[in-house]
Image (cartoon, helix red, strand yellow):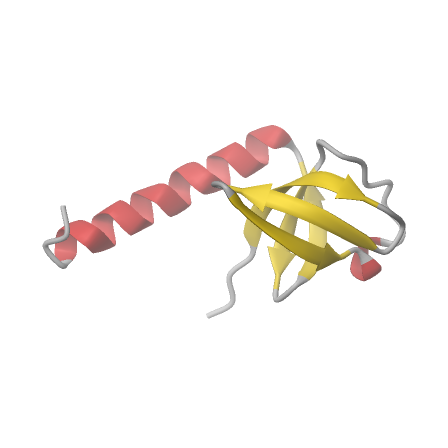
Length: 81
């Protein structure tokens, strides 16, 4: 299964960005989004070190809500409440 993680761009240049999500920061490549204008404050989907899609803040928030629900369900299933 492949999973893209929504992250907020903290700083960037034309080829790399420092992104943050849930207190975790990663440096990601913007190579696949060369056609997009990416700026600090934007949200992107990150997969294996590459930003693969620009998304709205609402889309990122909704994705994190869903991911949090899945993690909570898995914790409950394994008795980690």
